[in-house]
Structures are given as C-alpha cells and as structure tokens.
Length: 127
Image (cartoon, rainbow, N blue to C red; front, side, top):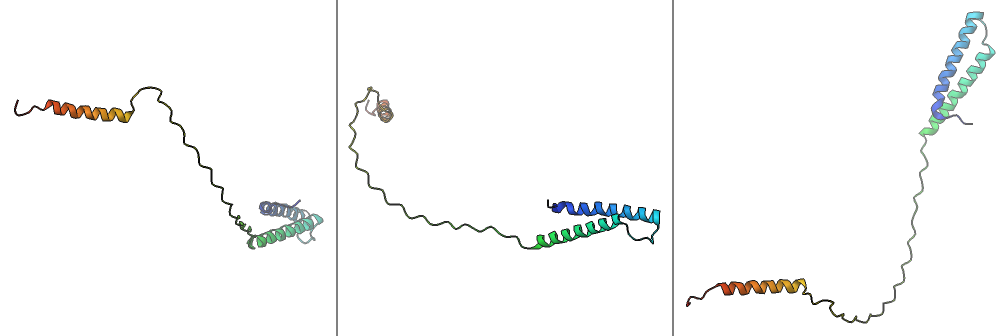
C-alpha cells in the first residue's frame, strides 16, 4: 500500500526518535566505540528510504500537471425549415351573453355626460 505524501515527514520524525533511542541505549550499555546494532541499521535503512521517497514526491510535485483536453463541440447541421401551417378559418362571432356595456362604453358615456353637464350649467348672457 502506498504511503500518503503528507505522512512521510511525520514518519521520518518518528523514525528519527526511535533511531536516537536505539543509539542512546547502545552507547549507554556498550559504549560509543561499539559498532551499530542490527536495530540501528534497520532504522537507518528505513530512514534513508523514507527520505528518498519524500525527495521523489517533491520532485514529482514540481513537474507540470497534465491539463484536461478541451472538448470541441461539433456544429450541428441546420434544421430543415418547417412546412407553413394551413390558414385557419375565421371564428364565428358569439352573441353577447349579457347586455352589459363594456368599460370603454362606460367611459365615453361618462365623458359625454360631463360635457353635457358643463354646457347645461352655463347660462347665456341674454337670460
């Protein structure tokens, strides 16, 4: 299973702490002149591999990323024109349901009544 990029630095730190502990225990028990123990050598090898993996990933991160290819839409062929519709026959006028006057009729009648009232209110000079 591949190691996550974000965890490599943390793993290197953990490895360094274990390596330091192994080296300190060897120096304390056997002395500084003794060769490295098997445990130290495996920790050093693991640390080297982790650092190489981190360097490879950092180098790969600097490389340009592949960009998505832009899709070119193909032009659709023009649609065939529709056939003209047949002319409709005119509808027959329906008789009015009620003898109710329309709004326009009401307004004209009101205007006529106002004009008639104005003329009727004026008195002639002779009378």
